[in-house]
Length: 548
Image (cartoon, rainbow, N blue to C red; front, side, top):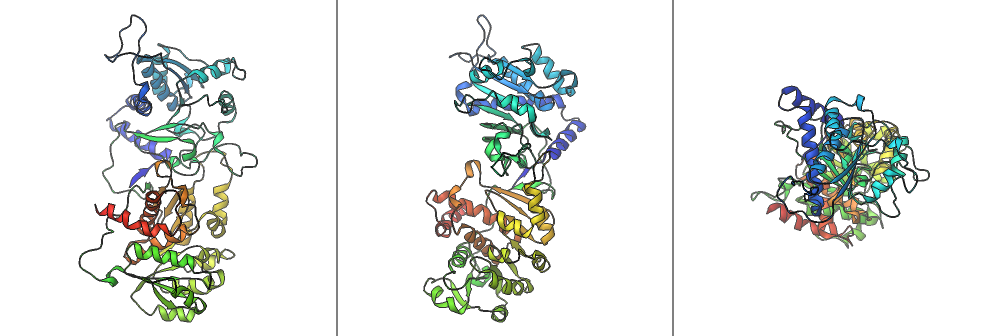
């Protein structure tokens, strides 16, 4: 696990370090600027050279080759702009030609940013965009952006609380998307226009797109963030506009304590106790019961059951209505089969106390779900509710919520979430006119608190929250992107993975986090062409890696 911070949490960490006397704000700003420059050279090694003017001694002894490199640094009115002035100075010291456009008033800069503004002005001065022509082909800013090797966005960073508005129009008008003039745009902390807490773009809705699209933030090729990544880098539009995210250590103290419940955790690796002990038997690893739908609708439950078995549940039984019994019997070997028709039959099946995990929903049908979900919840067993088990209660979600308990995991996708939590979904989809905007993290926490159980809100930016407010993000984005998971049945396998881990004794939130990670690792290992049946079959390969 790694922490994902909000803007307020990051500011509190910086302020605590400054107040302790361990570091000054000016030192942190210098380290941040240095980190950005180093990240630029790591991303584009061909730029890592030093050039001096004729007769000048280069700052170090490396050989000078090639034409002088050019950078444009866009600096805003706060400390993010201060970081930009440091970047400009350090690039200048390496022999770069640097132009700085300052969107602000020097007299209103924070003290540390003002120091670095003055340091830069002693070297190169600034250009004020409102004094230049930017709408025609000969405008200074447009020409500078066309000619720059690197453009640095140090406008607002994590401090943004409103849309870019007219400032966005001014800057964006100089970008020529058709010709690809801006090849290397580097954001300092977060791309300007993006809410660091929510990953949502603050500003005006794009007509006809139904979302607050990424073109209202500056779309970066590289985002350099400090100390810890921010929530917004990994949810909603963040991965679309950040390019690649690099985390830079600026010398703030590492945490010496257990994860705080208010801090979002990032799921970065698999569970540590998936291997089975050498002593034990099949019932030591749990017995999961997964209910299917009727004839012709059993495939989803069979996928879930296969996933539960592959992830290590000792036994997995499919509970099927009588009309589907022959169909399922022809399809399974290792899985077991039990006739579960109505509520009474389900009650009878649950008399077996060795059944310790349940999964209801995949392919189940609304009527069957409405009848059998209350029976499952009365048993107080660890239970996964997915698909039809969620949508069946969309007209009266409270009838579901009043029965839920802390051993339940809900696994809604966006549509199911909106049907169960319409008011929370409406808040999540409302226009994000100011920051910090309401986030998927906020929505999932609110849903888990209302439901009184663990909620896994699916998506490339999966968010998992428990009723006590603890929360984690598992994001299949950047180098973990797995678009081929968007295939029929993959969610059913995920439900099965969670159920199998519950059967093995994992706590609900840990089961959901571990299953989400393994689900993506399976997809990454298989690659394009994946169908849902492949996920359980590739899982042993992933488990062997964990064993190694």
